[in-house]
Length: 382
View (cartoon, rainbow, N blue to C red):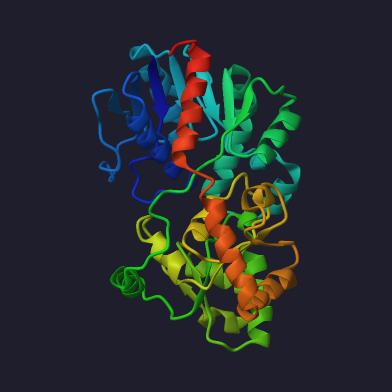
């Protein structure tokens, strides 16, 4: 087979969730498949060493600038030139005019949901809003052209099937994995290095919030405001890659200015440093309003960090009994969860043990094997 994989943002310096998923997919395919020929389509950028070519994996750098132009013009042109048997688009959207058989990874359809769009109204960055509009236009059209659609949880599979009236033959749930470097770190020098690099507090709760309303940053801040009024144990809230001006707006909305001195912003943290951030944290907070999977929960569990997450969308499916489950729309439940983990040693240890066991169930190798089987199904080739 001649297989194309869209990895448009793989070489960007600041990678996020979907970038890491396709990166791990490619790395695992390189280990398990030395028969088929692969073409990886990437936009030129700084981090061009994260994957390397092998005898059957070729990297094709495609110019195109603005993402829609890259995807709708440069990508289908390259797919035709390379005479692909299959193109796998990995990040929710794909070319509208494509002669090649298509597999689409549709991570979620959050941007199609009315309730989420109501939450988003007046929130989020202009980039996020444009991205949502682009997906709302592209996804309904490209679903009709896809030979197979991969999503990342049974919850999201049901959501997509119900929304677009799809039967089970076209849609497949394939779980994400946890990268092997997320683990309990016993090397104290490595922990000290990361602690000093990012000037981490001695005691902190870790929260991967951003400006997307679904991350529930406002709910976490309200919960912390309640917590600090009841406790004075020196814990800070650690937030990554969040602008201080945006944080100040939310704190002003809450009306508790004392929060500002109890929150530490690190800026962007490289993926290789994240395991130490998890290891050094007392609790990982993941009370999102809506997720299609939730890789950070599993990363925290693999590092031995207790997790608080939500009773909504995919999170109970992925966390199972290995996290403390709360209602993300009730900040007091987040607060109570923090207090329970801090005060109940046996409960905390139980979460840690169950977390290790749960994280071990999700591997990138298993994901890649299932995706490779889908490639074979679509092309009818081995």
